[in-house]
Length: 290
Image 1 (cartoon, rainbow, N blue to C red):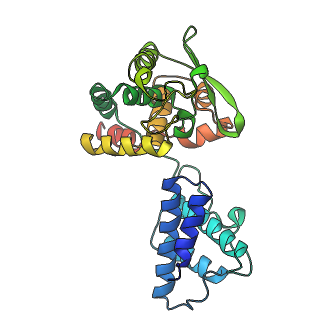
Image 2: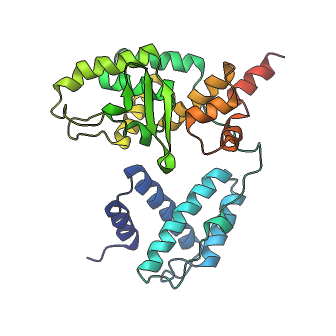
Image 3: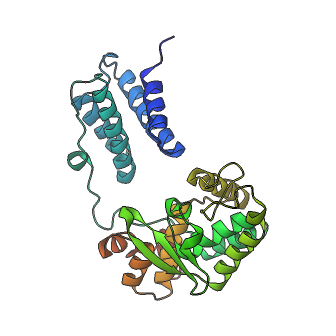
């Protein structure tokens, strides 16, 4: 039985080491693109061309799909197009990231989704019922703002217990230091002296270990937060907590330059783009107080 093109693409993504969530996202985007081509009664032997691609993007715009969502799909199509070309299934690369990605106007879709203070409190109370490891994860995400990829890369030597500092290896190999609150340090030490000391991977150089591996996978963190969100009845994911960290700092009067350094942003413009606007909920609350 011949394997479908989409299954071949999925298998290649997995073999290429892409994260499970990334594989699912790319495959879903391509499947929806293929359904669109079927509806338009396109030639099934033509997997992709410039006209099909641009037509689909225009279709998404007419459907009022969010610009950031469209741009994520364009990334998926770029990877798919490159793979098709490498395997001689198309004659050229049609998708150009710089050319095709839609520029988002300042102030239009830069608002971020964050946890409310009430939700933060619910999350913290929930962590008291969680395992020592999961409480450690929750505290690190909420009080250091690390990306989930940075979180699972934290090694034991990255934690300076005397100075209460966390050394983080960020994007592009850039390092930054983040001060650790007393309760975060306590959560880490409790985990190290408790659950982790009894793990079969207690000799691992990484802080967070799983039952099966010496290093926890970022998808496991996402899944745990997803399950936590279902219990708490609100959506929660790693980058939302990162946004919450930055937003809470700004609301408490921390200068944006300091927030930028703590978040490990490439430049101040990145921080300003995302956090110069208060959250949608804050705007709604402000209007309702009039």
